[in-house]
Image (spheres, rainbow, N blue to C red):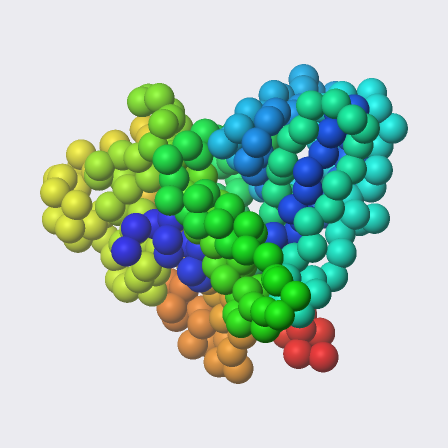
Amino acid sequence: MDALSEVLRLARFTAGVTLDATARAPWCVSVSATPAMARAHLVIEGECLLKTGTSEAIALKTGELALLPRGDAHLIGSSLDADARSLSTLVKTPVAGELVPIRIGGDGAPTRWIALSASIERHLAEPLIASLPDVMRVDLHNAPALYWLTDALGLTLSASAAPPVGATAERSRLAELVIIEAISRYVYWLPPGGRGWIAGLNDRYVGRALALVHGRPSEPWTVERLGRQVGLSRSALADHFSEVMGEPIFAFLTRWRLLMAAEYLLTTTRRVESIAHDAGYESAGAFSAAFRRAFGKPPSIWRKRRRVRTA
């Protein structure tokens, strides 16, 4: 499995459709900051503008998606100077599984856009989220997931029809596919010579090494062993990984193992000593010290979050 798929799987990535709207100019919608949730906007027909903070407005055209991976506050509309309505006031609870389309704005040019939301365990998704821009714009023309989602939203109830079976689950899966396709295209279209985790996914050798490290972090990896797996010598892989990623391979592996350890503390009842061993530490004391440096608190305090989750 590739590194992106591993991170999304381990971090329990999920998504859903928040809003299906047809808006006529002039219109503007404000979206509050949601640090625990990513936001995305997909333009099905027409065009609009999107702006975060003091940055320049971004133009979105038919077939384009904008992803805000850190859930920054933003405006979206035909004119960002128009009176803004809050997204929260527009969202309606689905009726019998059917998402009710809404209409807003004036009597000008129409735009149909779909608002998506996504959640993910942020400490496990840190390599991905840290590598993405504040706003990731991607052209999704000819993406099957785009057409599947549009078709699913186009199905409406007739007066005699039964409620759509599994409609909410279907929209959620399609929303996930749309966002994954957008990230994949963003990675694929990056120019060569970049640095960081996203650039590493696009590299023949680093991408393979990342897939192995993400998929099997507790294995006793050595640079030589990883090199054999990806087709490079020990020294060539070490140099190339550092050049692309901006850090040595074992610095990255250590950080990923600590991220996995943080997840095991939250989701299992395994002893700290066992988790420390999988993270590559010979003693619980050394592991606790490294964990505190990475997360600002010892494993015992971090594990208390599990009780809050369960409650």
